[in-house]
Image (cartoon, rainbow, N blue to C red; front, side):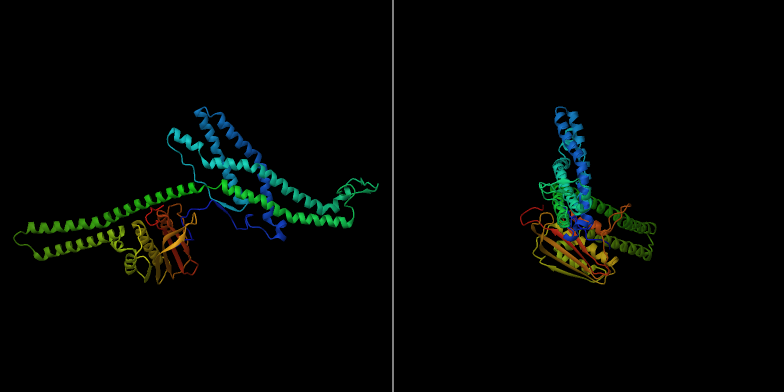
Length: 476
């Protein structure tokens, strides 16, 4: 079985990436002026300054154009198209933030076209992603100017101070109040940097400014990160809607696949056996009809025996098919169902159920938990080359991945001593992926998550967490 830890969870709006590729992690103070990330941040300020006037002009044009054509319906459609163009600006700024600022920002959900004239117009003019992108373009205009000017001033003055001893020889002579002539930078009317001691003092000041420059620049880059994370990432409400739509689609696909499998099993197995039984009974009837006076009892008994055996095989297949739809053991509770599953497994499975006897589990949670464990045990048997599996099931307090609130969840841990190296494999071009990827999708239908720890060489521990509704409340 293959899979890196993956779970269908509600992602956050964005976070700082602690990778060296971005500027999200501060360089050591003594190395900061020479660190690639510092200069990468300075390059971002340059790029932000170059784009800021065009972005501001687009934002102001969009708002003014929308106000000007508000009296016409057709004009509003054009204005809506211009507004949706802000999504492109937002996407560009989002990529800049990821590439240059080292933040992780989730892509907003794609805009779903609405049916109907007014609904389509309303969805265009009310697109929150476009409006938030416009707001980012407006508020970052003064920030881009201030950040670039302050950062460049610190860097330029630092460089000028440290190299003054060299280029000051080409400065024009200046006369002090006492009539003496000096060549060098002047501070006030009579203090000139034209002696070795004063040159060294200026160099020291330049070094101080050089080391302050990355720290000051980080303040502006931090503001850019906050604005990008707050305005260019999807809202939590839109993430929940996209998550719910995905979970609903997965549930529908899973139900359709189950129906197809049942139809295939009935057609290829049970139906074929019933046809054989019908033919055998027909053969017995023909024997009775043709030899009414002298029936060959031995031949007739053989035909009926074959029909009886086929009937029992058909009943066994029907029981197995019904067990695959919903195992009867689930009526006795999840703990009993898991014990039954362990008894029928192809390798030793030890079940440790903690506190499940008194737990009031919804039928949907019980069923999907059973099938999740069944698939994980089957994977351990087929792919992990394990010699044994431990299943630990219990109700535990956990923290909600989206809000951090405390809630109660059914937690299933499947531990095998196989070869490890598990990873979720996304579907390829042919639509084939790992069974665990499909299990992850099915768990999303009940807000479940799946986490895998599987180092090379094993062991593998797969944890399934399914939130439970509060007592007396409905599942969120």
